Length: 629
Ligand code: ADP
Ligand code: MG
Image 1 (tube, rainbow, N blue to C red):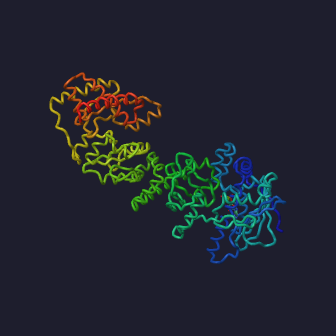
Image 2: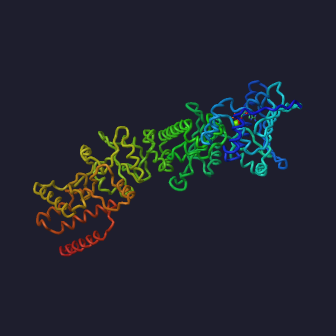
Image 3: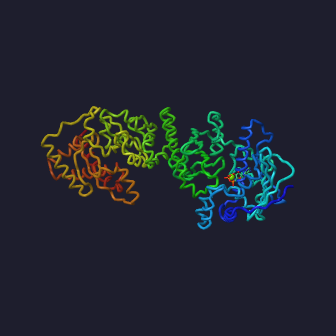
C-alpha cells in the first residue's frame, strides 16, 4: 500500500457540501443519476481515447450498481477512463476550478440564488453526500503509467488519498456508505431499478443493477436519422406515450446553432381533449446528455402545440439545473423558439406536399392548434396553417386554407368573408349570407367560437382583409354580378317609395327602443328582414360570447333591415296605402322582428310570437275558406 495522505477540501467545497447536504436537493435519489452520468461520461472518454489510439479496449463498457445490505453500502462501478491522482485532486477536491468569490456570496444569499449558481459548477458528485456518511472512490486511469488510487472522505473537511499496490483494470468504483436511515431504501434492488429507469433510462451504456440490465431502450433521438427505421420510431413513441397506435407523424431534428439540441417529436393520431383532463398532459421531456431533467416540460412548446409528444436533449445545459432556473433560462427560450419554428415549418411542408394528410392532422389537432392565434411572433406561419369549412366546399368535412380561398376569389375581391354559425345548414339559410349566395362570393364557415378570435387576431391575410359577412360593406359587393336568376318584382314606383319611407317610420314606431333603426336593405333577396349590428366591429356571435361572460341577458339593440322586394313587404306597402292605421302592420312588424331575433338566437320568450302566429294562421285560413279555393 502507498502512503496515506490527508488533504483539506478547498474552503468553498466544504461550505458547499454543507449546503448541499442540507438543502439543495429535496429528492435524494438523484445522487444515483449524478454518479451514473459521471460513469457514462467516463465511458465516453474511454471510447474516445481507445479510438484515437487505434487500439482495442478489452473491457466491455458498462456501469454496474451493486449493494451490500449488511454493510449498508451501494457501489457504482464503471469501466471508463478513470482518474490519475492529479485528476482526482483537481476534479473531486475542488469545485470546477473557479468561482471562489461567487461561492462566498452564495452562502449569504441562501438557496434561491444558490440553485442558479450550482448549475455553473460541476457539483454533481457531491450530491452523494445527501445519502452518504462516507464515500470511497477507487480509480485507475487509462494513462499508461497510472497507478490505482483510493480517495475517501466523510464529506466534511478533508479527504484521504492512498495509492494501491495491486494493479486493477481502468475505471472507477464508488462505494457509498449509506446513512443509517436511508440504508434500507438504497440497498433495495427493486427500488434502485426504478430509480435508474426513471432518471437514467437512456444512458448509452448498459447499466446493471444486481446483475440485471435495466436500461433497454435506445436514446433514439441521439442516433443519426438515416439509420432509424419507422418501426423503431413507432416503438419509441409507444414507450413514451403509452399510445397503442403508431404515431401519425415523426419529426426528428438536430440543431447546432444558436443552441445545441436534439429533438424527437411525434404527432399522435388523435387529440386528447385539450381543454379538459388532457390539458396538463402535455410537454416535451427534457434531457441533458441523456439524463432526464424534467418530464413534460411546459416551457419548450406553447400550449397550442401541446398535441406534440417527444423529447429534447441538449448538451448546453448543466445537469443539475433547477426547475425554477429552467423557466427563465435564455437557452431554454432559444431552444423553444427554434422548436416552434421547426414544428410550424414541418406542418407547412406537410400541407404543401399532401393536403389530404394535412387535413387529417387538422381534424385531430386543429381545435387546439387554433389557440395559436395568440402567438404573434409566428402570426404569418400560423395564418398559413389554419383551415376552415366554407360555402364553396361540398360538406362540413371539407377544409380550405386562406390561400386557397384567395385563389378562388373573384377578380378584384380584396376581402375574405366569414360567418359564424352552429352548422353548415344554418349558415346556408342565414339571411346575412343571401347576397353572398346570390353573387357566388365564397364565405368561410366558422363553427367554433374560437374561430372568430382567430379572425380577429389575424385581421388580414396576404393583403386581403378578413371581414365578417355580417359587416360586409355592400358597396364592395356591388361590383360582383348576381349569378342566380332572380324574379325581382317591378322596381318601386315613386309613390311606393314614399309609402316605403312611411312603412319604415311606422315600423320603427311600433318597435320603439327595441331597434336602433329600421331601414331598407340591399343584402336580402329571399328573406323579408334581418337584423344588423349598429356597431360594425363586433359580430353577433362575438357579442353573444361577451354577453355570456358579462352575464348580460338583455336583448341587444340592432338595426332591422327590410327587403323592399319581398312579397310580404310589398303587401304591407299596399295595406298601408289603403289605411295608415291598419293594425296588421303592427302585428307584422312585431312578428318580423321577433322571427329575426329567433334566428339570431336572442328570443327568450316565444309566447307572444306563437300567439301572433296562431292569430295570423286563423285569419288566413278564414280568408282561404271564404275565397272558396
Ligand atoms: P461534472 O460531471 O459536471 O463535471 P461532477 O461533480 O459530477 O461534475 O464530477 C466532477 C468531475 O469528476 C468530472 O468532471 C470528472 O472529471 C470526474 N469524475 C467524476 N466521476 C468520475 C468517474 N466515474 N470516472 C472518471 N471521472 C469522474
Ligand atoms: Mg457529473
